[in-house]
Length: 389
Length: 53
Image (cartoon, rainbow over all chains, first blue to last red; front, side):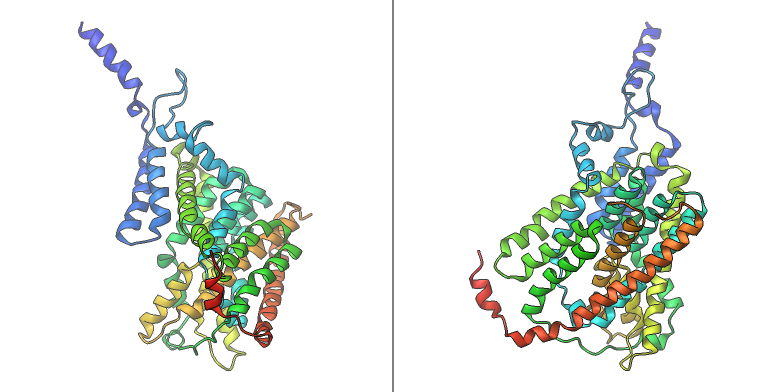
């Protein structure tokens, strides 16, 4: 009888995931927990990190094998399999439905006035993208193919939807680690950027106050999306779906007669998309797929891309100051990396620490918004040069 | 088009980085012309909102 009880207990245990739990799962659960901690305790992009962290944890709680003797399948993977809710969530990302919808929402929430008001600062949107190319070359040096290296490099554009878009086109098998690296580093920018910004500037430069920007008229704001959509569709067809949706969302916001649509695109729809996106990304973080040498390399290269992008933005701003009569605060250079509005907020905070009277947020938003176009342009040129439509 | 080598990666990076500067400068130039739009007239934002749904 005792043997029979043991047998049934053992059979019961095999029906659970406990027998299949391994060290890799534990590591990933700690990583997921850290994301949730940073979101709650440090307020680092909670909208992104809560969903990614939670689904990362659940993706690493193994269930019983699908077939006797087969590999364990986590409960989350059941809903990720075909027919499950998050299968379609992930397909929305992989089939490039989600990224353009995110851009629609971003456009509907964004005021491009600071970018229109100070056109000379848009150059920082290109200057802060050196990180893309440093990571690309390093990725090639460590053995990735040039398409994979391009996808890894675009992490340095600090633009999640664009990173997903380019990765699906160039190296879809790396979508999980690249999107995780891109979104995680974007969320961690308040930790990553300030040391580089302070290293490359002196206190006097950080205290520079900038003149108030001009007021941009409604007519300019309405014409802006149409003009940009024409330029991007004309010269960068590979990334046109994203920028076109960004501009459509912005037009809905600016025209004033489609307030309902703008509110939906930037509100309810955006929130739904964020939930789907974060769970889709987190569900790719199962230890057996995520804890690989390639992922570690991608995470390291992504960090280098962010560091070099931040540095090159600040240096570009300092170079601009050599030619400008009205000096700009070089801290706004790092905002050119994109990641709206996180990078602009970081510029503002670091400048405010150096000079409490300094409110750089509107000045930093110009290069920050230009950075979105900078990433799109870099991605578009990259896809074209690699012969990808 | 671009060879799958380190040389190709460097070539791609140089072309892409340079062209990004050129294109974004072009966008900057177009934006610098935007104030001239205001010579066409002014849009009454209040009237715009009243016409919305």
